[in-house]
Image 1 (cartoon, rainbow, N blue to C red):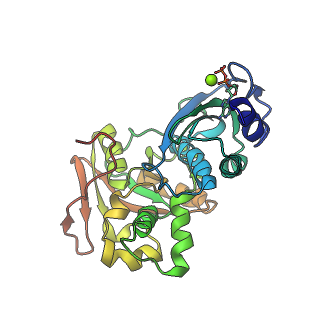
Image 2: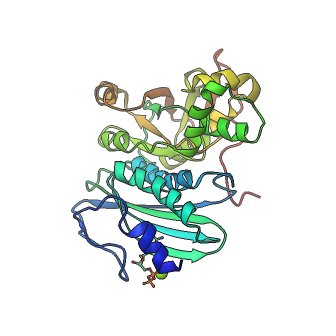
Image 3: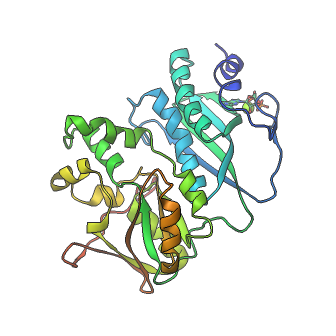
Length: 319
Ligand code: ADP
Ligand code: MG
């Protein structure tokens, strides 16, 4: 199977077709009907052995490559529209490609986002997706914009992806009945697209938690030139995480990464409005702390004592 047959067979006619795509896969450039508002563009690369364990199923790799990008669009409150796929493969294995495309297009279908182009090359496995979405002009959620007194919220649950990684490395056991749920959080994160869209006009700042809460909330604090205190007892974790906390502590939930939840700040007078829209969400929104003038992130335990922030976030070129 050569490059062009591969593109035709696995990528050209699968997935949703949108009527704002003038020319999709097959020419020198894709043409899309431009929008009135702002165009949000996000790109992320997944490298085998760095961003996912080598034994990860191809369907999960395809799903996750798109999911992490939709999570970035969610963080700015954008509605996904199109994406491109740059795929580097060591070999063109039809079974692998079929499963990869199946995971990819399952998520594309759910968010009506169309694959409009890409590039296909031979080399060590790596997948880059670039996702495009719309946001009404001036309404994008940014990292800057938090104010002292704003509440800090997170969606969903934190720490299960990091727990799953530790389980796969045999560093901790997870009871059989929770394994699937915990591994799903690592392999099939749910990008919080609907929440991001609903937070337009409500949240004062927003980020997606890809590198861990401490690192990513840290970006909001830096960009907003403020600090925060969060309470450990309020961190939303699963029962499986709670059961493992004696073994693994709080640092996977605080800085493990791969959660793909949203962390946002909300002026207290908008809390009622949030509760009204949050009833429709497929996930919870949990208040975990408050924005303060004093720079830096403070973490308090149940007794109110300050605990040291764990090593924060994955960094590819950290010395
Ligand atoms: P060019 O030589 O103009 O860069 P290519 O031969 O690389 O074009 O690709 C042919 C067409 O297939 C282009 O429309 C390109 O966007 C698309 N394409 C290539 N690889 C992929 C892929 N992995 N997924 C989707 N579209 C792809
Ligand atoms: Mg090319």
